[in-house]
Length: 410
Image 1 (tube, one colour):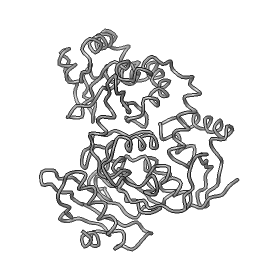
Image 2 (image 1 turned 90 degrees about the vertical axis):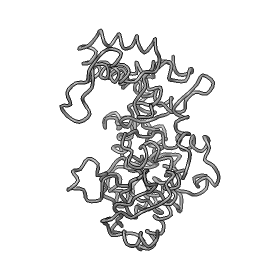
Image 3 (image 1 turned 120 degrees about the horizontal axis):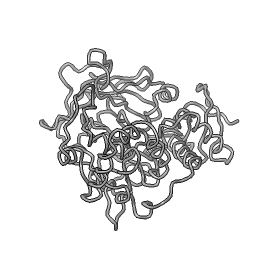
Image 4 (image 1 turned 45 degrees about the vertical axis):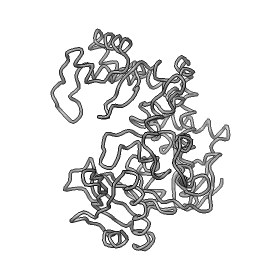
């Protein structure tokens, strides 16, 4: 069995995610085009969606980390479509809510079918069968419609807010149930980031709209292969997490991929779990990575992998009470070379045209503070330019071991 060093495994993972910034992964010297974005889509395979907008929407940040400043309208265009220009991304429950290529949406069909047989969608349909049928009729007749428009049309009121996020009207419950099962899909997001639902047959590209569901075993194998390709190297747990598959399903698919030669069992010095290397993974000798990664970036999805591979214990902060946060609210790990060198809590203060640094920390091992600060300052400058902000400011009371050096570098 082949043995890799931990440094080699790190470079494999970084390159697999399109973050190496060498060769074809160098950031474009001119305007970022749809072709550039498509290469990122092909490599990463999904963009997680989240409503938090403290810097920018979560699905926009991974493309910035890989491409540098780009027009967010590219992402919007990719997730909308016309008969002449089918969409490149569709929304689905993949790694939670995410944008995925339409072909990947098809691979997830077996999960949608399962959802319709049990769980939340089945309960909604059993409890509100007439509303379920009526909602589908309304969407079929009127086209893309939001939950707000639907519950106003049907005269439904929101329920009591018993706990966070679940004061849904019956109309909203039905729309979401239909989204889970694939009866409806998301045609687009509104300016308020609200889903507009339409028939899936009108959202998918025509070539896929009527395609039959793939055999479940084949679909699972292809999903795990996509996850393994995006990781470059990883464990069964790593691959399972990418599309939120069960460990048992993933392990069976990994065994099939090993048998077919797509995955190779390997050992990594210091990473004491069974590991698998994708046959097409590059083993680069160096990486020039420099990126601020969103909390929902695919490279940092799986926190145990992040700890074992890069030695960084990372938590986002937004789900932790303020008094218990160690690193801040919306904390971005800073990737430099083949390691995570620091982390920072940022906020885009659009009213003042300012990117605010609320915390900045060095990791325990890594380059000197002045080196990290200089590189982070350059990346913050790129981020501010992308966001259309004219200033970068260290917040009053900012804390962290890197704050002083970063202030000097800025």
